[in-house]
Image (cartoon, rainbow, N blue to C red; front, side):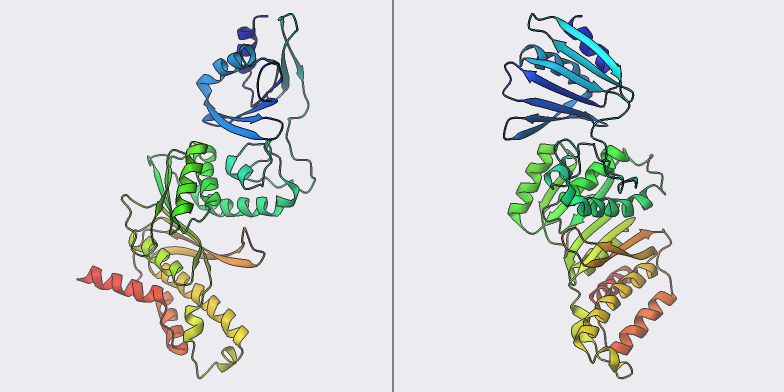
Length: 387
């Protein structure tokens, strides 16, 4: 059988994974190729390193032909949902093609404890998860990283719960801002989720104060070919977007920085807010009460109560400004303590005049002598709107 015909036969079977091996001239030992929704993901192995690349669906046939002719790979294995395909070139240059029915797919989960259907499937090459050390180069979960794998899935599930309730088919692009993005592995994962799983076009901006972080993240986005993901140097306070904002994300915006994130999201009328606050010190310094001194007498109790009050006030203010809000328990990616994630969805109903949510906030502020930053910021917003 002619080599091109054999390759065409393999690709017509809608294969999802291919492996080039047994090279005569290539500097690589083998190449793993995984079909993604928009491209093929390549992992090229030397004896000590692995290199990644991507190929458009339309270019895979020519790539395989070149790899087996010029680079000297003598064997190609490929899998579809029911069969394994084989192409082998003999020492005399004869092309042999065969296939067999296979009962199992390669790179499937092996643990009986992994029966839950996660959004990010094991066996799929997801570059950010590989670079995080969660997945191996072949898409298998690294056992010591299984907890982080579940945590990443959990965060995306919290987003997915809201996204799948809304039809975004008529919206050309979904605009997201990630405040305080840091190393941005999660930002890359979010991009992958929208583009490759939900098939929603996105434009994501990651914002951080560290120039070296921004430079590294932009290089990584280029490596992954995430064309609509960019990172900018900027402060949460006072940031002005150049387009409509649909979703605001922040993880670990420290103390009152979270308030500025939420305030910005409210004034932009963002549809979704996902925020994991940290280091809520502001109200702890302010708390004074005559009626409930039992809650301020012990430092540890006051600290925890102040943190919970901070997020309760934030949630109530979001409700007052028309957001359906939940406080969800969330295990952090890098630390073991359980945190609170604020999940808010703009219901399009505007400010609730004289709502019970605002009355509760005012009562709590009055009892404990509190002056939360978000309340003050929203007060300025109301004054601007009334002038």
